[in-house]
View 1 (cartoon, rainbow over the protein chains, first blue to last red):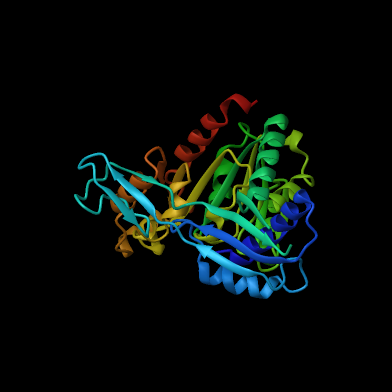
View 2 (view 1 turned 90 degrees about the horizontal axis):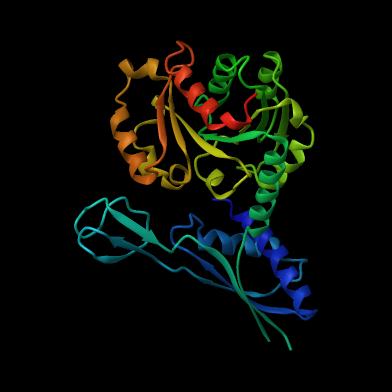
Length: 115
Length: 218
């Protein structure tokens, strides 16, 4: 999708967090959580990160990406199924009476800074 | 040292979108985010709707395109206030671009602001612009499987307008199939079938829009 725009926003946000914490130090590690249903590809974010971070405060930082799955809760058979992709029916009983939870968020989890 | 943030990326866009929404509300403007593939007929649909709504709602348009001002010129031809955004390669509009464009329009003279997004069914789904309704425009020639293939854009939308239904005799397009798929993704979404060249269905979409922005209409 629009991974370049996302990484631009990420770099700004890391800068804001550093300012808020009063930390001028070098960033060692940035940890992201990219839900499987967010439509954002970890590989592309990694590519954009390498492209956009040189010359910023995030230059040289390690990028750690977690990609949590979503859960499909079926109201017909009460199955809870972990899903990697968006589904319109329960993977177990094919009912469409389902509620999908999680897997959509795109989060900046943590930033590790040199002491 | 570790700073735990656990904050949404694109939060900035969401905040700006909320500001856009508040500014639109304050000005009494009802805004649409019109999304769809290149060539789906977004501009043609808007032209037909504005003609239908003449005398009922005063329209305005923000046109989003990677390059050029062809669509904005079409709007100027029919006398609709318009601002063109060129995204210089970006595949979607974001709330910041819309905020800047909005300043170029006299919102006091607009009841219904259509924000025509860049032709794209993927990236446009990630960016709230501050609109009241998001409408997907999909032409029959794109195929009836698109809701399954691009679910995110349908999921957050309030209407699907199927365009170019005059081509149905020449296509294997099953309107019932895509309607059923969209209803699964967005149960509340309204589904319309139109042909802008023949005029089919345009009045229904126009009436629905007029009703949706009813309390703002003069």
